[in-house]
Length: 160
Image (cartoon, rainbow, N blue to C red; front, side, top):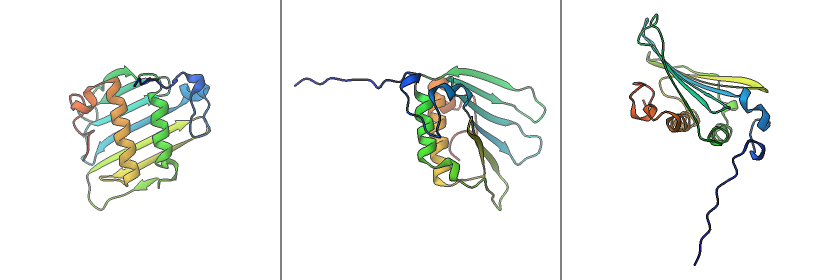
């Protein structure tokens, strides 16, 4: 018995994209995930992913510290697959804010594309759809920079 394996065509022209995006829109699409402590003067951890494949990790040790950054690039097609997960989890339908009665970790997930912009703010733990998107985002970013999942760069970015 012979099995043939084929790889999906991930060229920009062949991608089926959500949010009414066209392949030529990808360079204008960005995802952002940030963690911010409720403690005043604390640092931040931010992850930026762009439709052109760039991934930028940014952190500061304190409010006024110089940011430390790392950059990497995603394999072809990964960002488009990530957008499919974001759409499948109905990101645009999530509430804009999920406050908590307890102070803690504020997490912000944002998406910008030619058709609009959406940001969801979660204090501590968020709804399942939010957490699924964050998990997919962190996994995708780890393909560009393995330090994301190994917690060598971010200390807070993993699961709560």
